Length: 274
Ligand SMILES: [Zn+2]
Image (cartoon, rainbow, N blue to C red; front, side, top):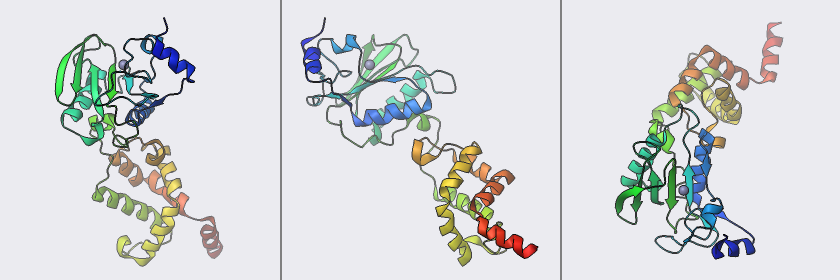
């Protein structure tokens, strides 16, 4: 039986958007390989009262959810065991919310199984944390607050990376290591004096400018070497240790040289030799 709220939404053209923090998390988790649902099926759409999987929720908090906005997602069990279980993932999200992490401050409540996928708890923060039991089993349900539909606060939240201990922020030492390795590969291509200290060498600094123009190629090489996905396009975390190892390898240094060594320079050198 179609509910009056559902019927009205159909009449108005069935437009809907997902709250921004949930879009960010949904897309990130889908990139990892999780199945994530947002807009509910007819069972949700006709439920009285309509809840957060509908674009006309009547259970918004702390205010009324703006019309047309869906404020919930369901994360299904991972397709394989290379991804964190729902217990591990839920535990990370729960812990981050309990720790008042800004990036997950949009979370109103979650239903999840801390022990297994056939039992569930309801953890809510409205605004104080209260735990109760739940019958919403088999997935992680996340509901956002009503006042964060366009908030950017969760844009970079990545519970999987946090769980794996990967930090998307590179330390200045890591940046230095990578720059030195890149300059190393570059200078042996013939641009800079190999004996000089690359960071203090004017030629090397100039090379760095040229190198930045070649960054797309370098990122592509890193992908080919299996060192991680290009960070800018996918938002997936990169394991810095793996990147450094790949850059250090003979294969990596050769690939950098090949990518950064212009054909005209190569031709000039060849001409000199012959
Ligand atoms: Zn749900």
